[in-house]
Length: 504
Figure (cartoon, rainbow, N blue to C red):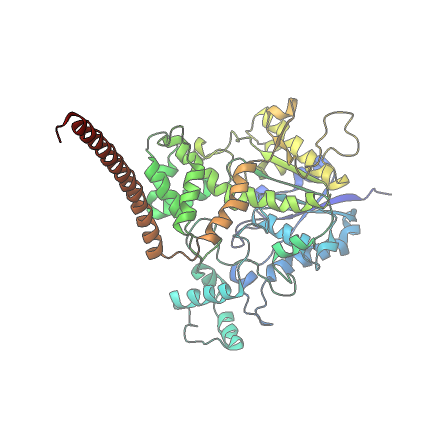
């Protein structure tokens, strides 16, 4: 009898508006053949077709997540025909796909259809991962009014509105879908629909209302760099961020301006970040040893964007699992591929690990280095071992090194890099202090200053200036009084002497 194989189910990313499981990068043949597992992927509706939420039967929201749910149910129903083990299923995804995985861990609808989860650079704790129902209505109105698609005269009567929308070609709806401007601002997103998601993911996580299972989770060293290119290039700042050469200047004042632009919304659109918050971010990410170093300034903008949108939310999500004693294997991918066509300054970009987890370096026509082929084999083995056994080392690794789960206070991670192939590198975090800034300090600062309007802020700034003057005046007055006192005392002593000599 053929032994049943572990099943790995892939959910692709793309900001919930693009992507396909048929992309060449997601070809699961090499992972399946080299690791003796079954790799499954599914398509799901994107954009307005997958996420429009008008709180109605015709537009309930999260249709894409129910598509994924059907895919997971299909795996359960058909695993035996694939020689797969329906009781040994791991779901995995990257970016928006990883957010999807995190939502399946939370939703009671799907959490019993798999056994483990792998999350790559994304989680429901990211502020870009969800939208509100009110936001869904606003996005729809902006979509149908910004371009005349034939529904601009329709009111909020949902059945009539949906009838009109169904008459519009899907491609037109996609082309004209409105999205907020800014980094990691996507057109249509998951939302609380009181069905797949009964409450905000953060609420479920705080309550402990999520699947109890091991997770393998992590992020890359430069998650923000690719988003900077798209944001600043299309906004007219392109040459500085697109440049592959060191032939530009980012002064500290320019750095502050770019931070202000990158973080104009907080915690998410349409709420604007106040100036106190922007100033705090600029201060936290300034390298004060040389604040006008162009390379450091560009690098630190990359880190700020990556930390806020990807790395720190991923850390935060994993911590909920760690806190209840579940095995959490955290990785930090730090290898820059020799096949990466982008500028070297962009480092280890968002999504770069996918090439290695799907085995592109070991393909026959590969032009990767031998070390990169070994790294890819190593990562596929870790991923598949976790899928088979719940531990990336497998049940028996011959007494070699062991990737131990993260602890509540140690926050241990394993660095995925070529040097780690021969000398495994572990760390703590990653980037714990920066994530503490995003998770603890900044929310309190922004909340505490939320009611300070521009006039009040100006008054406070002027008051601070006046206070400085008052202190200075007080100091000068004290000096004056001390001088007057000493002069008076001197005059009194002089008068006494004159009386004694008969001069008075």
